[in-house]
Structures are given as structure tokens and as C-alpha cells.
Image 1 (cartoon, rainbow, N blue to C red):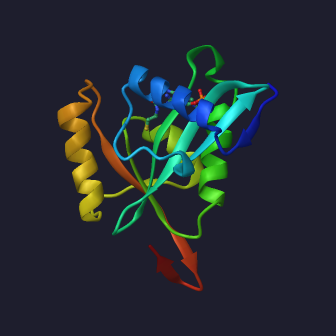
Image 2 (cartoon, rainbow, N blue to C red):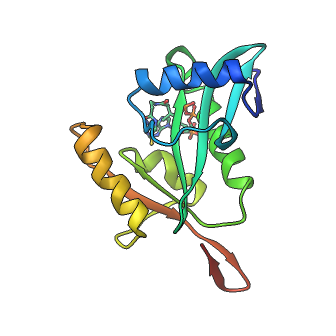
Image 3 (cartoon, rainbow, N blue to C red):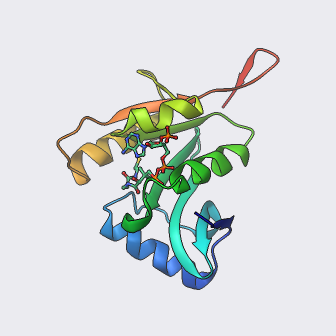
Length: 146
Ligand SMILES: CC(C)(COP(=O)(O)OP(=O)(O)OC[C@H]1O[C@@H](n2cnc3c(N)ncnc32)[C@H](O)[C@@H]1OP(=O)(O)O)[C@@H](O)C(=O)NCCC(=O)NCCS
């Protein structure tokens, strides 16, 4: 599957926002600069973002358009996002098995913004599965960087 990863154009950002609505993903504080997009020529195939909170970095609003799932696009987007930051990254999801291979682990302790995200998901993005918080730790010489 041939695709490239890039910063979205204005037009692609509008498309991303439509997909976020369609897939019922986190649509809070959406800003173009937070995203990377996977594109095939000019078609949006997938997207994801890093959202900087006051107390941590969060990976969220990850999606791949339905006909192009299971082709490695989601994996490439996550790899690119985590490569783009030198900080530890939190996320909230219902698919921990997808995120484990990148090094994310389920955590029971997390900053206030992640607690807020868990509340938002359980109240606004209702699904039968259980939401979990996960953390990818970034360490330098034994020190954990948030
Ligand atoms: C979750 C999602 C982003 C995955 O993207 P994708 O492009 O289909 O995933 P990839 O093809 O890159 O898969 C990478 C690996 O994860 C596995 N995987 C894919 N979807 C998975 C899922 N839902 N649960 C567990 N593992 C999954 C694949 O089998 C693959 O494993 P492999 O590397 O051993 O072959 C995509 O299914 C999607 O957009 N879902 C709807 C929105 C959503 O749930 N977003 C996540 C919110 S936290």
C-alpha cells in the first residue's frame, strides 16, 4: 500500500474533521498543526494527532478510512507521531492490543487531563467496550520525561 505521511493542508484538515465526526472520535480542541495525515495522491487515508495538555502529551483522534484499514496505515501514523516528540505520551482507548506493540502500557495513575479524557469518553463516546489509559514512557538516562 503506497501512501505518504505529511502535515495536512487546509482542505485535508476539513476532511479529517469530517472523518472524526463520522468515526465518533475526540473532536475537542482540533487544530491543524496537531495532525499528521496519510495520503494517497490527494486522498486522505488516515490521520492522528498529538494534543499538548498542561500536564502531559496525548495521542488521540487516530483514524483510518474504512476501506484502507488493516494495511499498515494506522501503525505508520502512530510510529510517526511518537517519533515526533521527546516526551512520554498518554492515550485513552478501547483497543489496547493495537497500542501494545509500540510500547504503550495500561496505567492506573495518570494526570488530570487524562482523567478528564476518560470521563469524556465514557460519557460522550459511549461504546460497550471498556476505556483504558495507556502510557508510552520516554526515558533519558533513567529519568522519565513527561
Ligand atoms: C484502529 C485503527 C486506527 C487501526 O488502523 P489500521 O490502519 O487498520 O491498522 P494497521 O493496519 O496499521 O494495523 C497494525 C497492527 O495492529 C493490528 N490491529 C489493527 N486494528 C486493530 C484493532 N482494532 N485491535 C487490535 N489490533 C489491531 C493489525 O492486525 C496490525 O497487526 P500486525 O502489525 O501484527 O499485522 C483503525 O482500525 C480505525 O481507524 N478504527 C476506527 C477508529 C478508532 O478506533 N481509532 C482509535 C481510537 S483510540
